[in-house]
Length: 271
Image (cartoon, rainbow, N blue to C red; front, side, top):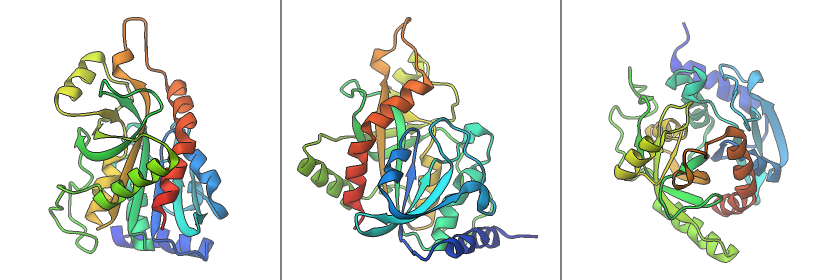
């Protein structure tokens, strides 16, 4: 019977067989944000279907490729789409790519997502640096600890790297961009939030809400990675009314419009 470590290593060994590059930074691209992958040059494109034990991404705007190539003069690995709990996958399946990345040699993880804006000062198209999160999903570390990869009780007080956040602000200043900062609320989906839920999340201290990211961040933290997270605000709670609804296609379109700016910020962090 395969052990978790042997499963992760099998996938990591397969990736090594498909590329000569050995990046230490990886990027997970969320809904509508796969456009950043177009900036990666000399790319080896590996469909998830080819990678042992990987699942298939069924979400809108997720192409389902793992890309290894060059970005801003540095080798990177990028997931062009992620797995979600609402797709019916277990938390271990959702986060398996992060475990595989760790066994491959990834030490820094940059994550992105499309999110609904809770903070009333946010507008559609804003980029929000994630400073902290509130988790309403099952914790992916529940169960027997994988001692070879991390401690039983990982500390979560400084999950999102302050140096990387500072560098993102510096890059934004050079580009003439204004970045938001805030707390990301993760819930299961696949339904969008009700107005009452938006109000509740805001009262709890949330600035944006989405259906991903935190499980991967928790596992990356368990693996000892440095983490940076960014949300594209694709719809706003303050705009909801009886005749205004959330729509998945609108979310992807809004994320796509912001993808160019996010690409420039992420490129500045690849050094």
